Length: 126
Image (cartoon, rainbow, N blue to C red):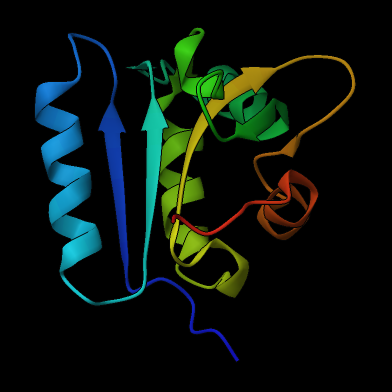
């Protein structure tokens, strides 16, 4: 069986490629199970109402050139919960993907990380 990630790297794609690309490469080369998560930007969670909205918001994971990180910001609390939850998700090991808040069909609430990862059909990095 695949081990869940022992390292989860959260990077912001804002400001260009060089910095986050190098960090992702270093994590991949470390030889430990990892997941690399990209967000365009993080926005603060202002209070209890924002925290409840963030927990209920749908997150969408995607891979490839059109990954979800290309569009919009992600609530900081939702991103933190995702990162922590990925440590227990073997299906996320060895993957790199973008995350964004989505609406309508697809994705899953931030509180349902297992469903989110399973529904994304993440493919291991080559």
